[in-house]
Length: 407
Image (cartoon, rainbow, N blue to C red):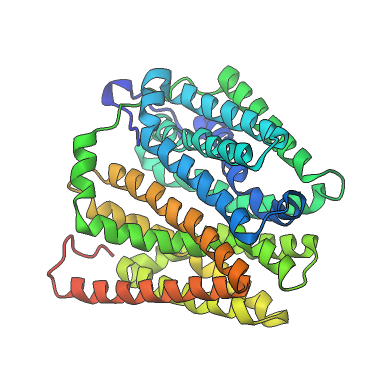
């Protein structure tokens, strides 16, 4: 939630000169994001080795999300004291060390506590990573610079299951965590030695502004929409490999390959979503995507074979279209109160529900009924929230809601 102050802003450099720095930061973000989702393709192995039920396995993502949310909300304290560069290094080193410690945990309670610390370490990065980019890149190139940076989550969603499919043929899931942790420690150390020194410092959170935003009804509506979208994009992703292995008879590698390749289109679909938002309106796109992903999620619960594969791919493609329109509308709602702070508050809260609670819900339903029932329930939830988005869109068309739709 930290933003750089004007006095800390470094002189801008030409875009071509800072492009290597952008790629460097993006590579750190890729490892940072992968550290949180690597447990999705590893979940079938973890569940078997630790003798967990589906609810306990799904709770891992809720625990990580809680730490991640808390860390983002308080990240300004770190960047204000250490600088954005120091915060990025701290996040990389802490996250890497925790991944190396995880395999050494002797009890499930200690494992969960360490997962919470993993979320805490990973969350320090994001505000400082974005602030560093906007500090070193001329404003005219912010869009393309952030677009490069935001490739990391989609690339991580593809790379994580593919890497697990390859590595688990040679090493155990414990050693996979050690390898990823080691990479984060190495990258954090290199960034400390060679990273940009022009990132500036952050500022401490403004709690008065936060309180005003939290009292805005429109903010909580967007939290609901983002929670549902993150549920469709990330929440289902985290439980999909386990579901395919446990109930659909997939081999571990086949499940991870399907999940990985279904996310390849996600690298370009946000650009499609942005164009659709400009062409038809952001609110229309939000409603359409929430309804559409819900309708495509339900078949995951009762289909098999080719139809299941097609549904997995289409659902992932459509879910990725939400975020350009969602972020644009969220920023518009918070324009008078500081759009960047609205985003910093909304996204962590949405991650707790969509990326944390939904996997737990799917696991709980899986223990008492079936994982298929959990996916069907998630689809019905998305359809319900999509219907609410349609009502909101129609209400906005009457001119009673503000701000006006931005096409």
